[in-house]
Image (cartoon, rainbow, N blue to C red; front, top):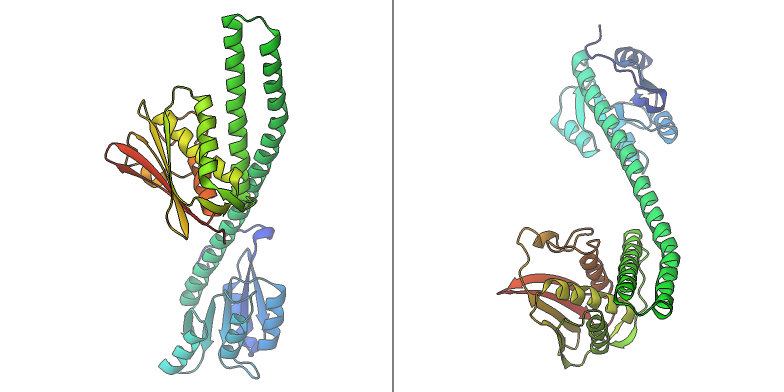
Length: 371
């Protein structure tokens, strides 16, 4: 009975073990000792033959005899370490020489994981081989799972991109129809209120679709900015005016200092500002939202958005993660701050948040020129 219980492995998951020894009897004996179900033993009588087998097969472990003509075990190990295909293969050296610390050190220096002296105890070599086979199988399983996970993520991102792109057309039609109905239907409060609700809901969904598209581009590495000369103060002014029209009750104070020109993508910067200011308006209570654009530095610009309130300490470390509600009352997908953070990074800048007294402060630092 084997000292180690054999495990049955499907043909597609069979494991290769390489044994290299120039003495045929040693190869026969080692093969007979290690043979089991699910394990294919590759035997080579020379270093050159072993290299040919390594080009054809992926192996879980290599057992190398040290003393061989032409290419000895140490030289073979060095050649294996120099190849991308075999550089990570664990190596156990086998030798009939007396225990010599210098030779053992040379073996480990060549990349060996162990150094065994003949005659080798069967239970020792069996237990060591079993460990490396199990490690190899676990590695292959993890590789397969990672591949499946990457494929699933790619499919999900592709589906999200296609879905959100295709949703834009019917949403545009809904908004156009709502606009037309506002002119054609009776000017009754209940009817007009229904139209306003329809239009607001469609616009909110349109914003979420745009956020999903941006998220998909960021995740796939497809986010592109088109930098050009622009004025951050002008961008901020336009965003403040737009949010003011959407939220007439909101009070937004814009303060500008210094030279606010930079090289950036005005559309992406507007989205960044819109996410920060819109978030502050929704969660800042009745106090005014304060927006500062500082251009005193010649290298960078600073943008601050302040509103009343506090961010829970437990939430702060994960504030800019995707699909994370930024506050207790989330009215969207939880992507706004993540997208703002990524847009800041795309401009060579940073986005941070902190609690200051009774205020929440979001601060963005942007490079004047995108590198």
